[in-house]
Length: 345
Image (cartoon, rainbow, N blue to C red; front, side):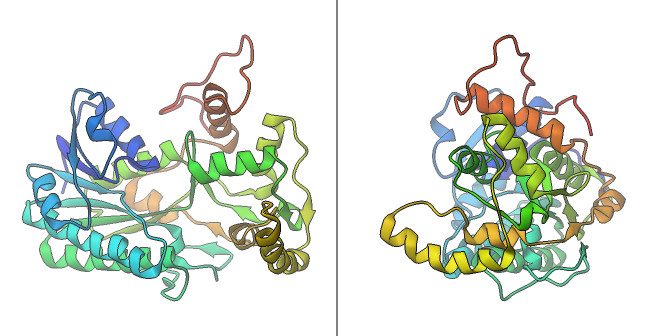
């Protein structure tokens, strides 16, 4: 089935990825109904943008939001504890798919995550690798939510396409851009084993391209696709970009064995001193990985391939950091605009 986009619903429209898909859709002249809990409804409106107050945990609000839509982009997620994450990422997803079915919507793009596969990963990760239902609250709830979406979609006649992005960075990314930039600038981060671990990074506009392909390409219903950048990079390369931007040394290296020991010691040390730790649990888990994400499935099923190299993406990020005051402006520099940048791989 070829899906024409005239009116779409975006859940999680106020989030990092949600805002980008909304912007791209509006730029194409598509009417966007944006489901938000706060914020956007009271903001200055753009032509074609229809903010709707609602929540994925409230089926009544979804019944109203889905009426008349062609496609749903389900980007909403949340929850700190497993119970809370299940309420939002599992039950909330069930509500969204069921509301789409009742409204006669035939295509739903579900934004999942590579975290559904857990941390015990092969050298090359593909969609055939099993989901991990015993990991952290985020990964487990997203895996359960994706499974529920697929099952209900099959039962109710909704073509669900699940995308499992890797680490999504870009302007305004709270963790992978602002978080690691600030830690590098303040010299509050270390590299595990010299930063040789693989960072599977995906520029946000490339993810938006994949989402649009998942919405419009015929024959993709029921598919789940890993999406990542053109090629994996090392954590040394990634944090090295931040170090160059702010004129700081590349973060120091800590051997893996010592990093594990430090994690235990610094957890207690940080509590008593209130000083930030240079290694966090996320760092140890991600920087020790040697897994490359395969995007062959997305290339074959979606006809999609990422266009943005790390160097090109980080140039856009650096310009954004300067505009937002995280870095001083450079006199005479022509900034790269946000959006579907021309600088390719």
